[in-house]
Length: 62
View 1: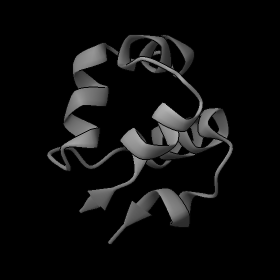
View 2: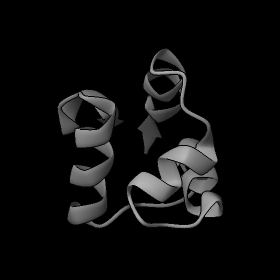
View 3: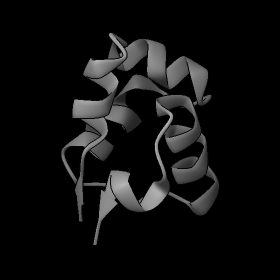
């Protein structure tokens, strides 16, 4: 699965650590999400999308 998390995160000038804290996960989880090596739960996908102010289907490309 490909994600655009990094692109949207950078547009908001957030670090991986800041995003991780906002969605209550470890920074490593954000690293794996951005690399497409981790499939998030629906809740995590929703939380990330909410923080990045984008719809889930724009953030994750299946």
